Structures are given as structure tokens and as C-alpha cells.
Length: 401
Image (cartoon, rainbow, N blue to C red; front, side):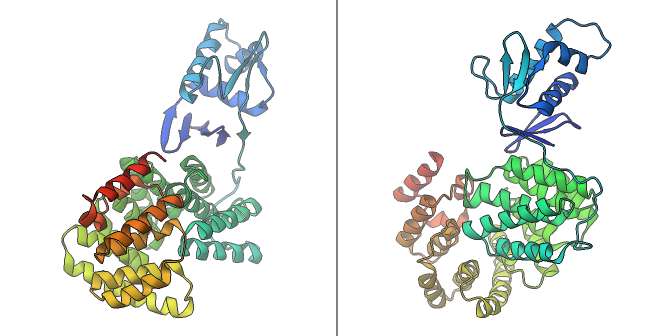
């Protein structure tokens, strides 16, 4: 994999990837791009490129001209003001954008702690805990830790999977603009190359494709992941989240319930499953999921009373279970926390009938960077206030971010 500007180029499949978008190059155009990337930012002469890409064959310079034109078209370059490929007058071409060559493990298959330095493994576990807690700061710190572990141990596949997930969550939920889906896909590809049998690597890639609105492609990755490890909680959780984002609640609910069954401290999957069951009209199963989630959250909060995600989670469960007084006390406790994750608070206020507090919180969330407008348009928690003029105005502001 080669990072060229904001594109990720896979020479093996001739694919260009960026933010969920994919473009495929012709064989010769791909060879020209690979050659340019090897010496960037130094230029190649036209003669040298012709010899490299068309060795031993007599061809005119127009074949190179056509290949470069194809690359510029696929990369989105303007001829007079190129971002990626620059023509060097009377010399040839060069890549003028940043080019990176991430290290690909030569001998992978290490997706566990076997032979890993224990201090790196400790950092990996800390990153997993931070990611589970959610929020901008925790997810950013998790991404940084996953990245440092991956740099020190390039063939530790689990760290690359963690980095892919953290990068994707930052891009779509917590800090849009700080990361992109193409970077997450690079980590997925490196993880899959490091260990083609890593179910979690396939699941992470499926999740990235799903939030990039390539749902069918995502499902293909998830089918591989489930086949590789049907006992993986993480695979079922990512699959459930991907289905949930696409409002495929009939598939999301059982996947999320299975994820929770495979990991006894997982309350978030149960909460999402409860919401999915609710959206499908199965109130009995929904209530059961919220009750189980609440039972798992309480001991978590006893051990970690400052776990904001758990506070939000319990308040949401209590609202769904009808215990509004207890939920209100938790909501007051959480109000001073500023983070895009406060979206959960806005949902809870809306469900509890506190429309003004829901709208106030939603405005704060958007001010802190949350911009998942596609989900806001479909989230049933806001159905009671969807026709409110202020809600419609808030929803419109997301589209201008």
C-alpha cells in the first residue's frame, strides 16, 4: 500500500482508495504511478518511464501521455493546477504531493501477544480500554497508542485493527477532519496482509466500508469475518453497528445480542440491540436488552464512577425502563461533560420528553464537532421533536459543516 496525497494506492489490485471511494487503474497507468511513487518527489524522464513500463517494446510517447492523463483524471487533478502529478518541462513527470510507504510485515500471522514485548502489550491493552470508554479524548489517545504499538511491532495485527477502528470512529463520530476513512482502510489492508485469517481485520474493514456507504461490500467482508471466527465478540459488534447504521435493524439486533453474549462486560452492544428491537417494534425484547445492559453498567460505575460513557448508558437504559427519576439524577451528573458523545444525552432527553434540554444539548454536540447528519435524520429517539422548527434548523446546520 502506498499513500499518495489523500489517496491510498494498492499496486497489487491497481486500486485507488479515499474516504470509501474506490477507483481502479489500467495496468500501465498503475505501473506509471508506482514508478513515480518510488522516487517522489524526484522526477522521471519520459524515456525512463517508457523503458520502465513498456520494456523492449517500441511505442510512441503518446502511450505515456494517455497513461498520465488517466492518472490525473482518476486522482482528480486539474491540468493547469495539478495537486498530484506535475509535468517537468522538457524532462518528464513527478509526484509533488506527500508520498508514504507504510511498512508491510514480511512474516505476519501474529495477532496475539505471542513474542510481543510486554510493555507494548500493556500499551495495547490500555488503548483497548480507552477505545471502549469512547469520546474524543479517549479515542484520540487510543489511536495514538495503537499507532505507537504498530510502529514498534509492525506485525502485531491486533494493534493495526485497533488503529483502524479508532481512526474510523474519529472520522465519523468524534473529530471529523482529524482522520479519514482512507487511513483506516490502509490499516485494515496491512492487518489483513499481516494475517489473512484475522477475522477482526476483515470485520474492521467491513465497518469502514459500511460507514463509507458501501454496504454490500461491507457485508462481503463480514461474511468472511464470521466464517473465520464465529466466536468473536468484536466481529459481531462491528457487524451489528454496521447494520444499525444502515437501519437494517432485523440483522443488527441479533448480531449485537450475540456480541454481548460473547463478552460478559459488554453493555453497549445490549443498548444498541435494545434500540434496534425497539425500532423493529419488539418492545419486550427491547426492554430485556435495556435491563441486562443496566445490570452490567452498575458494577462498572461502582469501579469507575467517572466513566462518562457508562453514565450516559445507564441514564438511557433507565429512561427506556421508565425510571425517569433515577435517569434525571444521572443526566444532571453528566451535563457538564463536553464531548460529541453527549449526543447520547440529547437522545435521552428527547426520549424523556425534555425537548428544550435535548435541543440545547444537540446544539452543544454539533459545536464540539459531531456531524453525523445522516444518522440524525433517521434516529427514532428524536421522532417526537422532528417537526420542531428549532430541530429542523439544527439539522440543517450539520449539512453546512
